[in-house]
Image (tube, rainbow, N blue to C red; front, side):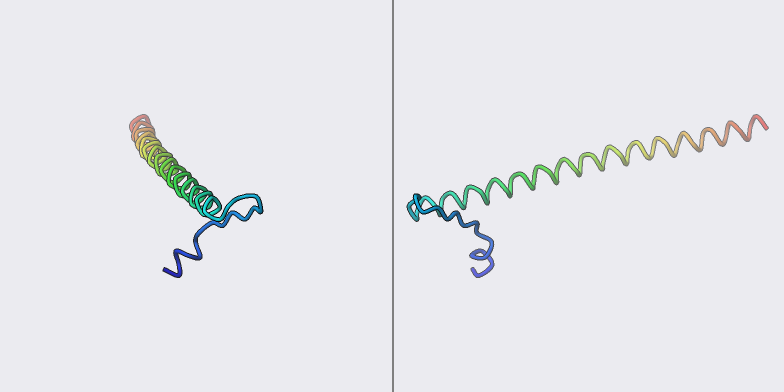
Length: 72
């Protein structure tokens, strides 16, 4: 409960009623969570793509070395 309370975003604006301040804070926290998740997912996808490219590059190096050895 204490961690949840500390992680809440507080929107303090004198013109907003307290209940709207709480809802606005929850909205900002939700947006942050969703954007962080989307960014993490995009980074994971990029890492996967790079790993595939690295594997292809390693295979190309092995093939080039094999071809070099064959030619020599």
